[in-house]
Image (tube, rainbow, N blue to C red; front, side, top):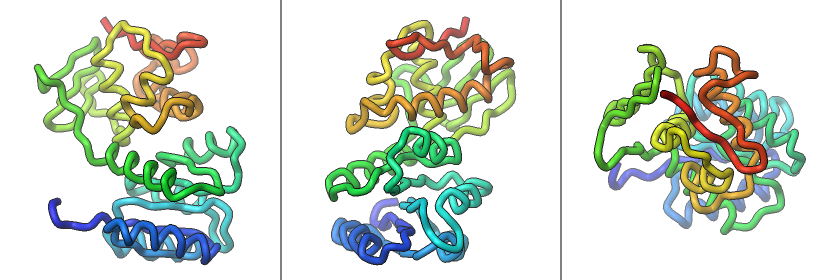
Length: 232
């Protein structure tokens, strides 16, 4: 809403980093809560109206992965993970548990703010077609005004990013889309190389719309290029 500050919860056991992130968010107009571990974070999350969580993974008492798992039991609030662990397996694990983005330490203010804005933009937008408010592709029907996608008449439970991704595929039914084109359209112009994001989110969608996710009928992999959505 206009005039309402976006509220961010910053969770990190390292006070200097916590304060660094908090200061840079506050001077840009964000309202910020901070926590030193997962237990503190959940207490704040359950009592405050949080729009975004910035979450470290390696913390005492309750680590970031368990904190994220508990948040995702009840909420789709965007989560940006901060971690010194930069291996792809670490990123995939966090994304599978519900992270919306993953930022490897150390990072600069510019990179942090670009990711924060991109994640908030994805969570707040409602994709719409210029010519229609409804898309139909085979067994899938998207009601863009209600922000709902039905599969065989039943509503799919989708995160904002999953919704945007599936809408983009439905709008490009039958077309081969490159990794870069998908990332930049759905995640934003700041992205383009994060192929592990696509693998995780394509996997999620396949489990929701494919009878056999290991042998997909709708979401096909075009090796070395990207993906193709086919629904007649």
